[in-house]
Amino acid sequence: MERTFIAIKPDGVQRGLVGEILQRFERRGFKLVGLKFLQVSEALAQKHYAEHKERPFFGGLVAFITSSPVVAVVLEGKGVVATARAMMGVTNPLNSPLGTIRGDYGIDIGRNIIHGSDSLESAEREIALWFAPEELLEWQATLGSWVYE
Image (cartoon, rainbow, N blue to C red; front, top):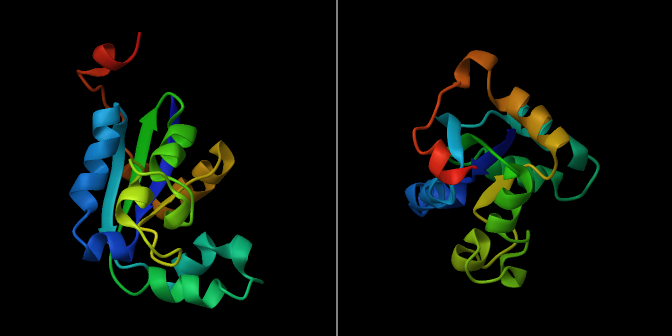
């Protein structure tokens, strides 16, 4: 099974959308294997957004993600990276279809509610950055046989 990293950003936390967002992934059938509520340090934010370091918006990304608590999540399931991305919608909420997280709750590209890994490689890097191995649980969901053949 694949794993992916999801972060419910400060705007999602401040707007009270954490439960709704987690519920969407759980109802889809994905298993929660890691969950944290944290205030992101500047050092963690800079590592997370390292690929954007030379871009003019880097400082704004770091400032925003450190401005208020974030919920960090690791989900597990078949095709979870691509499916979670589809469930989130595109980066600009105004271009995201209704029914996606960003399409239902976002308006501004700088306040787009959620982050999700864009590939298996990114997921591995981001999970290792945000979670220690002992913070991820291996467990059997009893509903697994009702989700997968």
